[in-house]
Length: 224
Image (cartoon, rainbow, N blue to C red; front, side, top):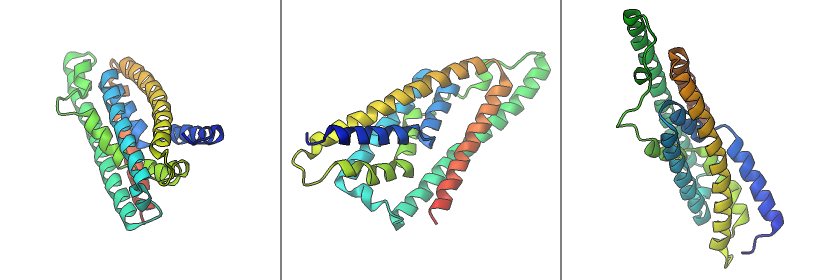
């Protein structure tokens, strides 16, 4: 390994800052843990880990650099990522509206609050891993980070390239794992507490869906 302690400290600080910035990856993990389960949240986190790993390898191989700097490829990627986030956002909003419609007649007919099973979206077709992997791979924030920052610490002509890459990748994934573990624990607890409160569950769907749509608008506007 040819990395110095100063370089490792600089990379670690940059990685912490980029991980802590709000983004679609952490939002998806949080909403999954809250509305499905802690285990589903970890499946979503696995998709983020693998997606980030792929982006790191691509950055080292040079593909990440080709997508940065306002290129046509990057603009296309931001539009694709924005469209995907919009699809996720509208899906959550539709679920929130549907849950609200279901809750009203249920409460009116029984005089009681709707049950937890009415309000959760635990569907066999729902794949946290596949959706989070797609979100991660289409996340321009991550691509720009790896293309513009990550590659400053690895050089193609370095004989220890892949050793350095391995060290940086482990640091990055450990920071991400610690952050997502916190997100999952907090979100799962909040989701459990809200399960008996229909208004909170419905509101969480609408807020999360709106957040995804705002991310989509931001990406679309940044691509022009």
